[in-house]
Image 1 (cartoon, protein in one colour):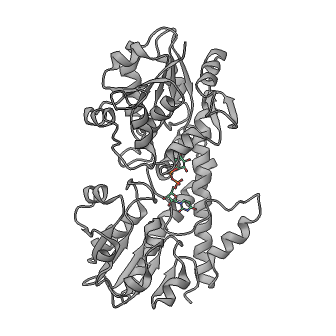
Image 2 (image 1 turned 30 degrees about the vertical axis):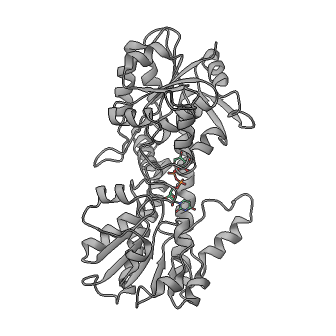
Image 3 (image 1 turned 90 degrees about the vertical axis):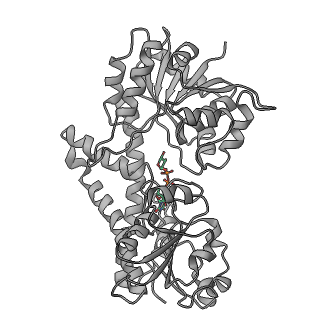
Length: 441
Ligand code: UDX
């Protein structure tokens, strides 16, 4: 009989995983402790913006006309325990307030609530990003007859569905052949097709995730450090990245210089990794991550300085600043640790009159930064601006007509914080275009 799957936690990771498992043909029950989320998902609606996810949900959620009915949602731990053979724990592990360490309270609460209801022979699979050593601790607290596996998730927001259905690799940390066999069954097809299946122990599986994110963060801060040098030496970091990227050992990806990385993963993961290494007495091994973090945070301050220079060099008082982009990356409505909003907030605190526009992130941005100004379109945001900051590289902004936009602002200065606009196009339309790590021209 086919395995029955539950997914605990229905954020970006859990909602996508639940829908993907239903797509693979499994009967799936998703749980969240927030009843409003469960109600929305049960109607085939997604509480966040993630391309393709709503379509996938509507294809499977029980009760929706024409759906397979393989996917249901609940708030009942009892129901989840009785239903599932394999339980995926997908709750989030944010940064602790005022500390580098990661907050394990949601993971601990999920395991605590689930444990009393688990059936003999059930497999619990952790997907959350956790400090190394957590799996061993959590396994020890599970009831007899229940096993644990650790199966980190590498999905990117904006590509969550595709990354889940076609992962680069599947990593499973297991302590028994049975757990491995069950997970091979879950990921047999079509997910597993062509994806390397890496079997390892608990600590290595936990570390793979934090190591991968640390490497990606390091790549971004490396190119941003080169951008600093390029600016000092009048070099061009975009050309430099292209040229070094031709070396396959380096590769082209994740070498986009700009205002740096943000979001719910990279910043908090490198900090939690440093904190955990410290606890393990291996803090020296990760001191470079402190530098990665500090190069990254410097980018935001540098953008503020470039903006100040653009409006006359002294003060933001009485100056109008248009900010294009609020989310931490395009194709997402996520504003967690968004470099764009951080820059907007700093300028606002220094007296600038900031107007933000983002294609999908407005509601979340308004909630987080209610004192900033907001506009309903890029044109409205730019109207009368002394300087325009391009801080999240949405396609909509690349497609803007600079000549048309120029009519809305007399100053015509644009600062590209993502190196994503075409400098020639903007300059030809009469704009002063300036980017990070590139010559002023
Ligand atoms: C990341 C990892 O990519 C993913 O594998 C992991 O599971 C979760 O964390 P995500 O946070 O969705 O995914 O976004 P990602 O595409 O990695 O971008 C992170 C940040 O880096 C964004 O703010 C982005 O703008 C920035 N970035 C990315 C750069 O500044 N330059 C680049 O070249 C690439």
